[in-house]
Length: 83
Image (cartoon, rainbow, N blue to C red; front, side, top):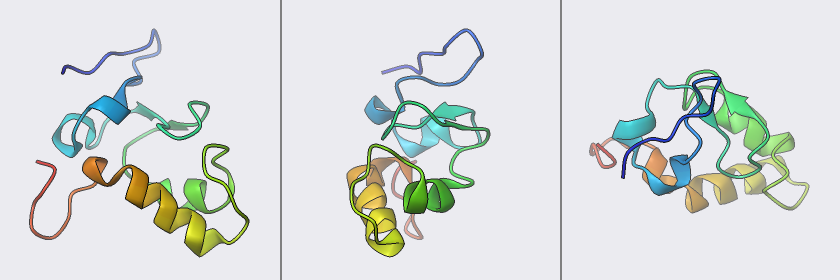
């Protein structure tokens, strides 16, 4: 699948893409669909820990783990998956 961009240039369908498609791009949050990451994945941990309405709970560390679990395909890991 190819990235679909909003009129402001942000990728709107990241949940259907892979890390290689969204890395260093402006991306609409795949959890809440409200926040815009100016350069994915920078800031994901701060957003998911306390702000993302798409992640439940109040414990920041659990929220970050849930965000990364749900969207793991959008993160590059040390082995290079998601490329």
